[in-house]
Length: 241
Image (cartoon, rainbow, N blue to C red; front, side, top):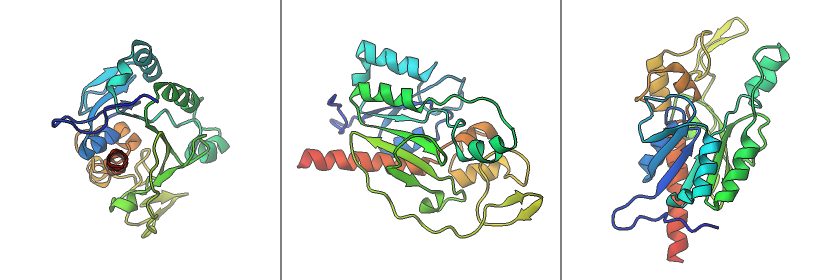
C-alpha cells in the first residue's frame, strides 16, 4: 500500500481527493476535520468551495495513478452516481416505469481506488448498490432536520459504527395525496410539500450553494467531518503505537 503523508507535519494538512464532488457537501466536512481538499466533477460546479478539476472522475483518477500524482494525496472520497440502484429508483420509479437508464459506476470506481493503494471511502444511499456498509450515517445522529441515510464502504482503515439514533417522527410532505407533518424535511425532488431552498440549506448545514439540484444530491458535511476525524484519529493512534 502507498504510504501517504496523512498526518500533519509543520502545520501542513493532509491532502484529500474528492471524486464525483458535486457542490462540495462532503468536501466541506473533510475540510472541517482537518484536510486540504481537491475535487473532481464532470459538471461545471462554480459553487464548489475548494479547488477542483472539471472532467470525468474515473479518467482523472486513472491519470493521477499513471503519472504518480496520486501520491500527493492521503485519502480519497468517492460518491459515484447512485441513481441506478438507490431505493427510489429500484422501488417507486422503476415499478411505475418512471425515469431513464442510469450508469452504475461503483465497481469501476472501486477497481481504480484499489490501484491507488490509498485509504478511501465509497459513499452510496440506501438501495441495491454493491458496497459494504461499513458505516451507515443518519442526519439524526448530528441533530439535522434530514434523515438522509448514507452508507460508506471503508478501505485501508477501520471506523466504528456510531449508534443509530431513533427518528423523532415523519419526513414532512405529501405521500399519496395526503400531507404529513414532521420534524424532518425531504431533501430530494420537487413538489409534494418539499422544502424551500433556505430550509434545505439549514437542514443540511450547507450555505454556499442555493442550487436545488446540488442541495438534494449533497452529503451533509457533518457526515464527512465525522469520517475525516475518525480517519485522522486512527492514523494518529497507529503512529503513536
